[in-house]
Image (cartoon, rainbow, N blue to C red; front, top):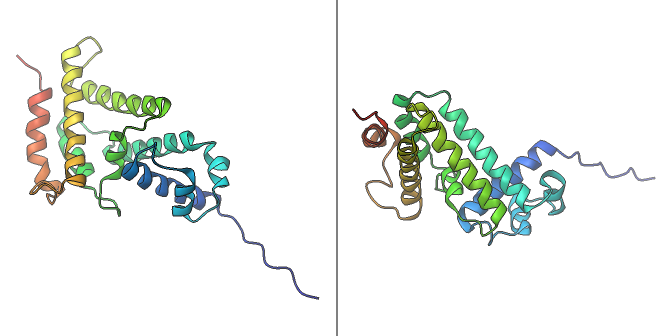
Length: 195
């Protein structure tokens, strides 16, 4: 009598992480509309049905990618003061993932072609700008300060995009420490209270 083949134990947390990593890379590189769940599953080396099991849908996976990216960026930012923001932005912009791009930032830039996915992305960007404006003293009644915070966020994301897609030198090879001074000038120029 032959013994039954050993059952392979599924590691749900590991499978979920593999799917998130594969999806983040695909969404950042190809965009939401051009990415298929089959592509993601193939990249992760798992059955495509597991996307539905862990994330309900492609949209749910995209939302999880954005949420995870934001959580990672928030952990990296910690409870930064306004004076510490340029250092934190520099670290994020200089943080090159294994794919050669700061995927967490680029993921926030890619238009998805899907209204709900774009709504999620815009909500996250709005939240970042609101948090930055609040650090600068915004109380919800100063649209100029909120606009300035949004411009600072846009500039930060532009840095990530130029570093990842154009290889514009010396920006592309600048390290976090080299980015801090210009980012400090930018943030203080935009957000310091005007007399």
